[in-house]
Amino acid sequence: NAGVTQTPKFRVLKTGQSMTLLCAQDMNHEYMYWYRQDPGMGLRLIHYSVGEGTTAKGEVPDGYNVSRLKKQNFLLGLESAAPSQTSVYFCASSYSGTSGNTYEQYFGPGTRLTVT
Amino acid sequence: SQKIEQNSEALNIQEGKTATLTCNYTNYSPAYLQWYRQDPGRGPVFLLLIRENEKEKRKERLKVTFDTTLKQSLFHITASQPADSATYLCALGPIKAAGNKLTFGGGTRVLVKP
Image (cartoon, rainbow over all chains, first blue to last red; front, side, top):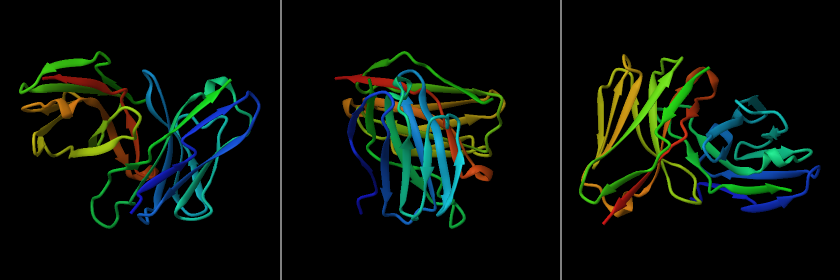
């Protein structure tokens, strides 16, 4: 099992450019999440999904959109990148918890994004 | 809104000693609390989950306590080793009504010196 994978690992964008970050998991998890991590700010939830075709806003959703067309994939889009979106982005997945009390989240390796 | 505080200063500790990390929270009464480890350049890895009705949880050299009255969790690494050097994150949750989402603290960096 590859677990949670993220593409790309690094990316540099210019202000106003768009891009999509791809997250894939092979653990058949129902739930998936996108976080950003900034120095001194910890992990902050951007958007999450409880199943195929459903998404919800997290703590810091502005400037981002997401889609979950397939259970194993969760896409994070930046339509018009801004320097404030320079960060490390992490994807995570978890079971729904209904099949046993397994609430841990499994994280990908992260994508380091710089917006100039 | 929920607020989670972890000591932002790095904890330097001698090998063999016990490292103790603190996680304090306000404006929330979580039913669960989790601890994760994060190494530089990598994603967090789950370590332990403790429930509100559990005072203490252990896993190998790790021990977590959860005091819902003080709104505090303590994370102990006993007989610390240089390989324990990492950042440790506290997280409140899951919030079952909201996709089992977690709210993370800023993390405490631990450096174990040989």
